[in-house]
Image: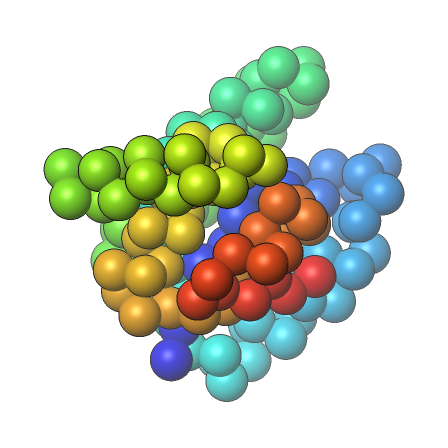
Length: 134
């Protein structure tokens, strides 16, 4: 059993002014119990998350701290393979509401037999094989 945590979830968890911040904290407490198994991040989610923090002009030291927290969990990072990128492009073509990063997230989930994605992004709703937890 495992889950993937999406950029929107991470952003809401870190940025207190974000609309979904309180809900992200609740969900994170639940994740911390370990009852959902391992918590995975994809390389593209990490990139998107840290870039979003920088674009939102979050303090540079805070960005580095958040990045280090994730990168230190190196066994929980899914690195995109060529096969995943090819699959993601097919998903991206089929589901117009998904960004390429979201399509890569779905491809990674399918590749690792993960069905739950923690996200505040409704684009995942209705995508075959995954369930959005929000």
